Length: 455
Ligand SMILES: [Zn+2]
Image (tube, rainbow, N blue to C red; front, side, top):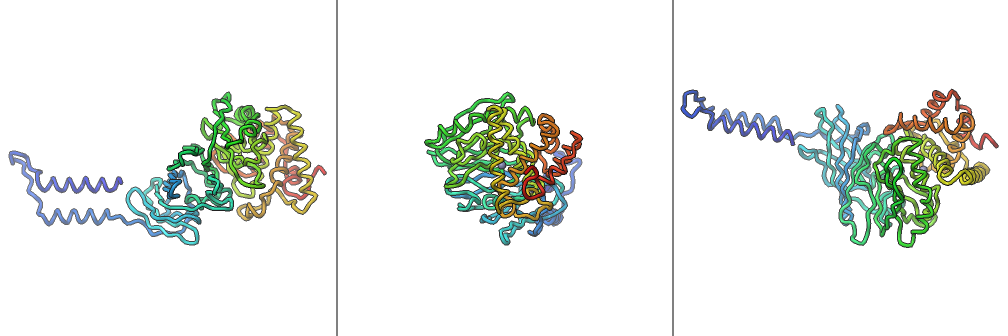
């Protein structure tokens, strides 16, 4: 855009010089340039300014800074306005498995692009600033927890964002979002954030469209308004499940620091289907399956991901325990803070028997593999093991250094790594640096071994 304005200015100047550059009285009259010279000058400018974007090529190294999505729910056509970090590179690649890309443009003109094996490659001009590219595309409904689902909600964790928008599913690449949904059916309510204002993993953005009723739970001491959105017939479960959410969220803000994703947040009921229990950390409006809507722990668990998992992203999928283990520990503690120590003890005892069942059967595995970028998170690591062994690791650390000291370390961890990606080793290092206690043996027993070290 800027480049074309500049060209226009030159063309206008050339036109003026040719016709009216002379002083009215003719004293300082400038001789009109020959018409051929003007034509040559214009040709030169046009030649210099012709839009010549680089060819599409593969480059996964480009950092995505932000993605603005406008989605038409009636047609499933969408526009993604993507800002990349400045780079010397002249290409960028995105996951786009489920997208039909119709055009890719920069403000200055159309860009060269290709879609190969579900990968969108774009040629990106490099002029020293953060390039903006605009992708117009359409997408389709999915059926296997891998995109927009028939229930009107999205589910893209861990690596299905490419069925919804051009993206990097690697959680290391954090970005901010804006989201606008058009043509929401009139009898429905769409619950989604206008923006995710702090860096988040790609899987964090989400929406749900259904017949919602919003119940405002209250405002935390730090000023965050919390709500729960429930489906027809779901009020009593929603109110029971969120009984501790306001107090628990207050405790998170007080213990860990300011909530990073805006001044409104809450739980949204979603009809995940038979047998699908749990929630998904779509902060600031995280999803909770209707089966879990009456479970206080699930709401507190998803809420805690605002700080760990979302607020601090995991550096490798192998660091899944940093997200889920930390959050399981925090949510268990938050229930104790909000509803009393007896509830917390009962929850620990439930975790305990679940873990015993796992370690005595064929499903046991190591919670924290010693690699990075080599596991398939769904096939290799997505069980209750990282959640439970992770939580018991923290409980064992708390027994050594005190739960309050560990709270302070978790706060420092969020202050240090908020908006960035971090690994479980960073947590171990911080525990040792701040408390003097070396947690390596506890990590070996709980996170790097089969079974449980306290058995
Ligand atoms: Zn979780």
